[in-house]
Length: 330
Image 1 (cartoon, one colour):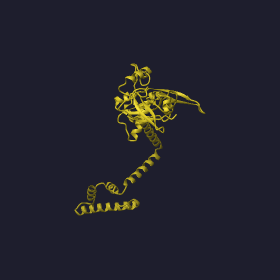
Image 2 (cartoon, helix red, strand yellow; image 1 turned 30 degrees about the vertical axis):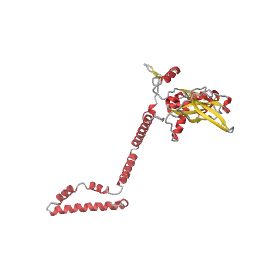
Image 3 (tube, rainbow, N blue to C red; image 1 turned 180 degrees about the vertical axis):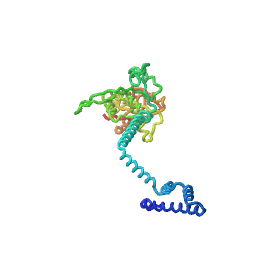
Image 4 (tube, helix red, strand yellow; image 1 turned 120 degrees about the horizontal axis):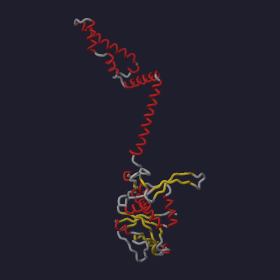
């Protein structure tokens, strides 16, 4: 059927009625000519022709986007039914709203707690370790162990890449115009390594303060693994990935020149790279300073196996190279 059947519906309905009536009357006339009475001829013709309204519906289905007409009729019928029974309409709408809302809330909780993975790198490798009691108590039946036990577990660990502890806490933020009560937490040094994330603020300031108060040696010992991971990430992001074992160690002054005023002092940090057995021997990088023609300053960086190198008698670790220098902005 053509598109104009949508705009001239009554005309097309009349044409369709006339078409069906013509075919039915023709069949009745044929049976009458064969000797049947008009009553018998009409019954036989209608029986063989079938349901007329069903045939009309099949013809209407051939019109373009007939589904739209069905939708409009259904909407009209629903509107009339709701006007006749407003109580039923309100009950149905409230029931649907409650059902949809409850299902949405349940799915949101289940999705957040069970289905959706944690927003960390390799979330399936993050586990919670604790002690338990037979009767069960505390948070999910897990008892936090003591600091001494944690240090023992960390020292004897052969399973996890990093281990850290955390404790919920609350503080009052002062030294601001409006002191504010905030929820926070206390964590150990490797907490962010466990989650493979870095804090947006704070960690850099802590390290710089530690450099000022305790010196580079303490910072390298405490934060060396994090600094090393940061360097490796920088290299990886710039397609210069370190293939061998790496380690961050302090730089010690050795030799003549500016650094000679305080030989053996910690003056910076560096990353070394090489075979694991050799890197494990490295304790520091000795910075040897000298001059050429009194106008050219020379600097050599040598991986050594001692924190107390002696000029002229360095125990160099061979097979290890210096791959990065660490500057602390104080």
